[in-house]
Image (cartoon, rainbow, N blue to C red; front, side, top):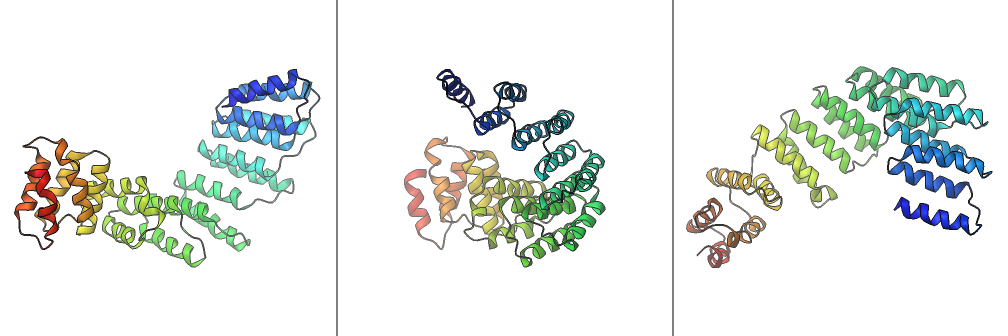
Length: 330
C-alpha cells in the first residue's frame, strides 16, 4: 500500500505538482507504519531539500515510531533535531517518549521525561500518566502505580478506561484480585464503561487467581454484549477452566464445548463433553447442533459418535434430541 503511495508521489512530482507538508507527513507516517523508519527519515531530509519545512507533527510521527520499535535513542535524536529547527516538542512528543521508555522497562527515564516537560511548561495529560502507570505495573512497582493513580485524581484528572485497565492488570499480577475487582466496580460507579480489553484483563486476572467460577458467572451476566462474541475472551475462560478444573454448571460446559468445536479442537471438546455428561449436565440445543454437523465427518467408531449415541440412548426430557440426531448417528 505504501509503495503505491510512493509511486503516485513520484508521478505527482514528475508532473510538477508540488507536495506540501501534509503530503510528506502522510508518506512518512505510512513508511513508519511498515517499519521503514530509515526511509521515513530520508524523506524528511528530501522534503527540506525541496523547501518544505517539517512540522511538529512530522517529527512526532518519527518519534512515536522510533519509540514503538524500542529505539528511544533515535527518538531523542529526533527531538533534538526538532529543537535545532526552532520547533518545540508538545505533549504528544513527550507521551511518545514516556511510552518508549516504559516499553523498555526504563521507568526512571520515563519519570525524567515528565520532569522535562513540566520544566518547559507543558502540562501532562491523562495519557501521560496512564503510560507511566502502565510502566510501573509492568515492572510490578504497584505501590508507585497506585500512588500516581490517586495523585492524578487529586489533580482533577479523570482516569479513563485505559488507565483503569493498566491498574487492574497490575493489581491482578501482584496477587491482589480483591482490590482489582473493587477497582473494576469503582470504575463503573465513576462512569467509565468497561470495553472488551477491560474484560479480557478482568477475566484473565480472575482465572489466574483461581476465580474461574466467578469469572464465568460474570461472563454469563453480560448477556448479548460485545464481549459474548469475542474469541479471545472465550480463549481466556477456556484456558482458565482447563488449568483450574472449574466448570460449575451446564452453561459453562456448553460454552466451552461449543467454542472448542468451533476451533476444531475436537479432542478437547470430547473430554469436556464426557465430563459434563458424567456430572449430570446435558448439552443444550446450540451445542447439539454443533455436534451434529460434525458427526458425518467422523469415523463410525469415533469417540464423538459414541458420545452422541450415548446421549440419544438415554431418556431425555427434550424429545427433540433423539429425533434431531437419529438421521446422523444411525
